[in-house]
Length: 376
Ligand code: ADP
Ligand code: MG
Image (cartoon, rainbow, N blue to C red; front, side, top):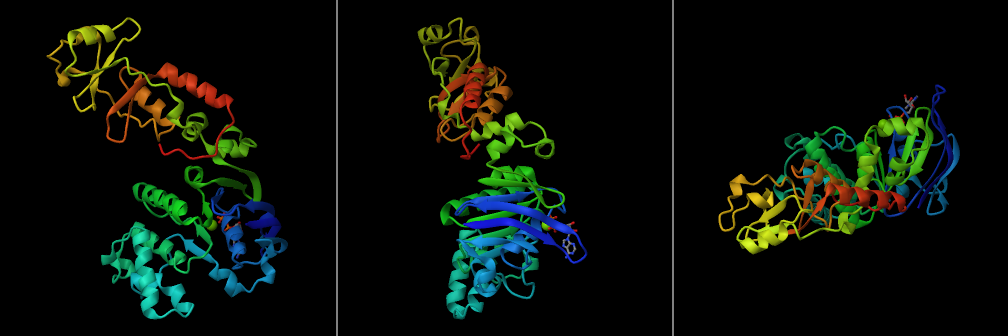
């Protein structure tokens, strides 16, 4: 565990970049430092690997003061990733990744084998190994930066706005990849960003900092959204807090109904039996169980259901893995106000109304917020 204990950094010109900051960074999870530009995020991160020394206070790694640890040993235990990856332009991709193992005295062959392994791990095609950084896209370069930081298998990864320079689609891919890597490798990651949505998506714990290097709030993302400490944090979080918080509640508890679901080849009796007064619409499925569309019961002619004439079913959600936010979104987008739940194979498992989702949201709010992330 990394413990930052009442740390202040005052630059020679008098700028107080970090002001009495205290944080306990838990092991094997992602802690995000987020805040506006100039609030002291980079300074804080660089004090953790001693690229910058604090003016006051102490930082402890596993209970030992960083000042008592040789800088070289310390840096080896901490991978460092920056914006635009910071790759060596005159070295090939494979040699960029092999940099630290080579510095540690590994043979060229052993270092390259390790580098090749890491390329695969971060989702880079082995065909890119012999290229130079300028021959890669921004997103690919960023993956190389992550692979290089992981090369000596350090327990700690420090990442300073690593994804800020890539476009939103690539960025989302890199974020998902980082979450996957983290689940696989269990590193202790300190991640700096100015983007609150990135912080909420990636962080197990999020430290919101304000100008002047002060800590505004340190909490799991669901708690930030439900209980911002003050108006600065609330403004920084932006709009739709309530809706965004629903991402932290799984849809597994939703009670799905199967009564309004009929197969395209259903008999007249079946359709009649399902089309009762309290079910205004029926969801028609193909013989394979996949959704085709909605219809009112009286518009369905048994044996002659025309999929083209059904109301669109919208985007379905996966009750097993998605969040209440995803379920609500599907219901809001559905022409009938009912969301369609499907399994892995895309087969309908049931449908749920906005009203039932609304009730689930109310009981979720009443329960303690979970810090666990839900996929959708
Ligand atoms: P962030 O990463 O959150 O944008 P920084 O940690 O880079 O913020 O900077 C925090 C504050 O310290 C800013 O006001 C910045 O101008 C100032 N600062 C950063 N480096 C230096 C330096 N070497 N000398 C003087 N002031 C600095
Ligand atoms: Mg910075």
